[in-house]
Amino acid sequence: MIVDEARQVLQIEADGILRLIDRLDQRFEQMVAAILNATGRVIVSGIGKSGIIGRKISATLNSTGTRSLFLHPVEAMHGDLGMVDPGDIFLAMSYSGETDELNILMPSIRNIGCTVISLTGNPTSTLAKHSDIVIDVGVEKEACPLGLAPTASTTALLAMGDALAVVLINKKQFKTSDFKRFHPGGALGQRLSRQVSDIMFTDALVPTATTSESMQAAVEKMDRHGIGALIIVDDDRKLAGILTDGDLRRMLAQQKPVFEQSLTAAMTPSPLHAFAQTPAFDALNIMEQHEITVLPIIDTNRRVLGILHLHDILGKGEFKFNGFDPEKKALLERITCKEPS
Image 1 (cartoon, rainbow, N blue to C red):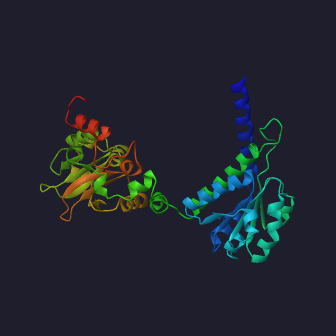
Image 2 (cartoon, rainbow, N blue to C red):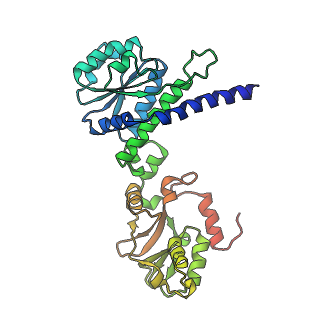
Image 3 (cartoon, rainbow, N blue to C red):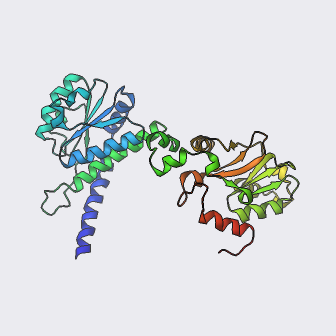
């Protein structure tokens, strides 16, 4: 019985979100365009449960490259309205659209000259009439059996805010590496603030082959390391090229006899690379820009020092700084044919 009731709540809230899909139209596009073209910030405002959701939406926008702040309607009427500029977008949130504290504020917002966008479940409400753009976030019913506590309605409001934030991420071409600036205290921010030397594979963990080795020996090395790439070096261990899983797949697709190919013919010569002192976020930018997942790490004489994988930047498993790493230990044991301890 309890589980059934919980399932019913989740179903009602899921249905509320799904019904928003058919209501998305040119007004959503107008909202995105207004925010992209604005010279100021997105001022989010609401009260009660809508205000709590508004704070979360504002935080999401800030962390993903869209400047925003939350403005409490009552505090705005007592001096905080000074934070609002004509170039701002005012994003007002009220499910009923008849929240007195918010509607009393609207004439002042209009006088300042902001573009007003409302997220409301009542497109004919007082709030909607004060708005330049109205986004309908109405739901059929609340999950609350009394129909009183905001449940499905706040879920729908939050989902619409997330949809807005994600679209803006794509339009602004916000990259993973941009998190370094906005999340310096988070796990990803800590990784991106480090140097490549802190997170790259070194020594026996670096999959390498010389230009004179056979293709079969090279493929066996690539398979043992399991990184999806093999660094090709000359006799002085200087970077000559790189061979990847993708190179092998393309040869197979072209029906080339793989093991009859020479490494120098199959590899990509003079591949993209980084240095040990390169910031991790710069290495990530290279990977994102060129859509690759590994980088050879070299010194100023082009000698190979290590290899960096995308997973080691983004944190596959628990992140380690030059310390004991169970995953790398297991890989080393496999490469050296030792039994895992």
